[in-house]
Image 1 (cartoon, rainbow, N blue to C red):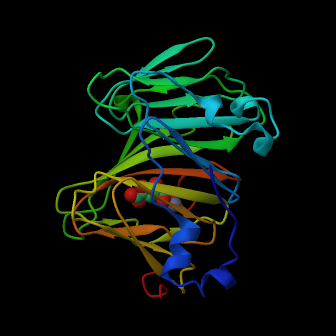
Image 2: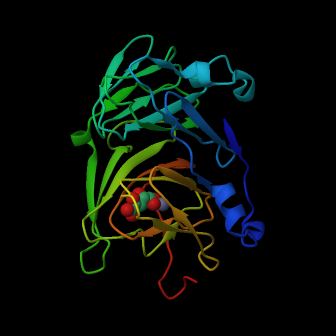
Length: 280
Ligand SMILES: O=C[C@H](O)[C@@H](O)CC(=O)C(=O)O
Ligand SMILES: [Zn+2]
């Protein structure tokens, strides 16, 4: 497990490229036949890269219970996950078996036990991305199929930011304690996400970029609105945004990303937009 601590923006503005990347970027979240965890002290979010073959991977065998102070991972946590790869994935809990196809999502509520993951594809390992947040009550677990997400279309071809936002873990789709998650796909020819940029001091946000073709990159913009910095991001890499940071990106081609938020509220639209005349 990797651990990231919280940064004060007054300190973060002095970071060089190496330090910025080590604090906010996770380059190796997906590792064959393993569950890789990143524990961030930003709102205690945990990001997981889960890559099983056809032999089941048990969630708890990758968890150090002393770190979390609980008997099992979801004792006081909830988790959401999205199947990024082409291989179908079987997720089992003590009470249910779920099958996730490409871009299906699953929410597991607090209290779920004996969680295992396995690929249903003999030829290929599976790729599942997950976020977990502290939880204090148990909402029902639920699979959200790709076509059950709430769809929002934003941007335009002229401004190179035409994209489709799919909201999977959203209060209008299902109740969760604090976790919100979804997938944004940039249309061919569009490269910008989330510009004009915003912050939401109420929530942190994580972006897992994917569908970045070989030899392409995304310049992810972060930092306070008047102290912006960039991080060059490649396929299947994760950037964490503290509440004080903008989170926006411009790619050398179109791409997709899974966003996830947790914090005080789940009001998706209450962003604090930064005027284009004010960003620096
Ligand atoms: O607070 C919301 C988040 O930043 C994302 O949902 C933004 C996003 O997916 C987009 O504009 O493309
Ligand atoms: Zn945001």
